[in-house]
Length: 226
Length: 247
Ligand code: HEM
Ligand code: SF4
Ligand code: FES
Image (tube, rainbow over all chains, first blue to last red; front, side, top):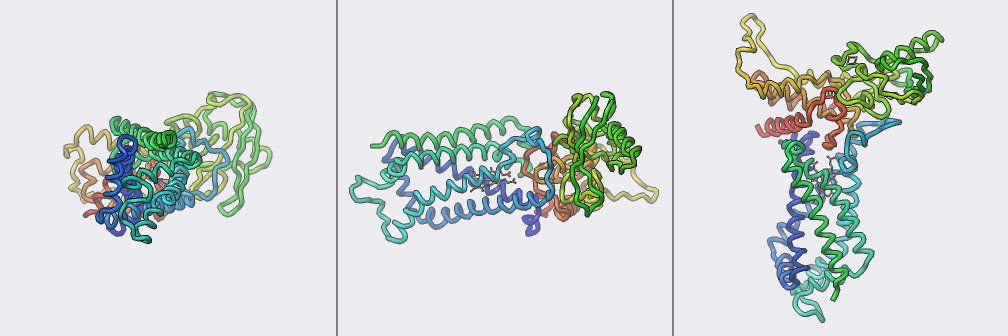
């Protein structure tokens, strides 16, 4: 098995597995975020549970961080290997004639997502860690805020139009990443997704609806601040 | 037709190459691309110049030798053909045509447009065969029942001519379509089962050793392949490798 993950195909399988994990995580993340639009109280409750449950904080969260780091580090390793497999480039190359822009630029859509993840960590994750682990405040409360602080903090973050703009752009890149990535991950796992119309359609739906949903949430809070 | 050709010239494997412009005149649109190259070479020989080295053999799309990257595409703009099957009527009078060798670390240039594709041979040697007892009591292959479906798919995979267009077209110089085809043609048949695990492990290991890139599933290979080998062969190879690694 050790040799498997050193082989080119083994690495692709590992890449696809980490990608599946991220795609499932993203669904869960969306399900919680959308609550902030429909019911801030429930959103607060769920956020408090997620933020203070020890299984989630100490088991699920490290796995998730590992998954993200693994995925982009492996992405860079594969990209490096791929670039070094052709030292002399073509003078004239018509790659658009045989492949999609998305499929050829996974590394760039990925880098855009990575930039977003860093911004997202600065916005939400570092303050959380600071409050809970440095200050030791696990109450979920904040001075001058009724009930839990999570909804309040979310609204604060979406005041800045530049940040909202960055979120929107990042999710467009996520959509581009997934428009190729979804079926590609199945193909890597040995499922001939390209041929199976249903899988392809689910892929397109997932890749467009989910990022659009995240964009909607960001815009909603930007324009509905109270 | 009158054409301007921009061709990669490189004296030998170690020389630094460059693009050189040539003019050819009175090219018939019924000529194949290689016949047009013959006209150019005759012209060069008559003027005492070194003819452009290019690979070719069958000139009917079955040997896979005629590697050329024409106007930014492996084997030129047509689908499902090799360079020898490409006709000049596909081009316009007065056009400038760019001709480069297939580019990949695993396909080093030997001279001009000729590249060394021995890496493919070494991958084949690593497992692209079945062991049959030939001591006189060989079983007739037709005596083993094979489903029509499997036989058709194996035959489709076996049409790969090892031309390397998949590698040339791939942004990663990946050889997965070639190796996928070679693994598939045996994986689908009963005769291929006995050595199935070793075959896929050894062929993939050799492929990696040769310096081919990874697969990003862009699908460029399938489109540029003169035999339209399906991406499904790569998925099958991935399944075979997972199966073999779990053993
Ligand atoms: C953190 C920044 C990210 C980077 C740098 C990145 C990079 C990459 C790269 C380079 C590939 C292509 C690998 C190849 O060509 O073989 C890839 C594939 C993929 N990525 Fe990402 N990615 C990132 C985040 C994400 C996220 C957040 C998701 C999903 C929620 C995701 C989903 C996928 C999928 C589904 C694939 C296809 C896997 C396959 O082809 O087997 N990526 N990523
Ligand atoms: S898979 Fe197609 S493009 Fe690749 S070597 Fe075989 S015939 Fe040529
Ligand atoms: S010369 Fe044989 S395939 Fe073109």
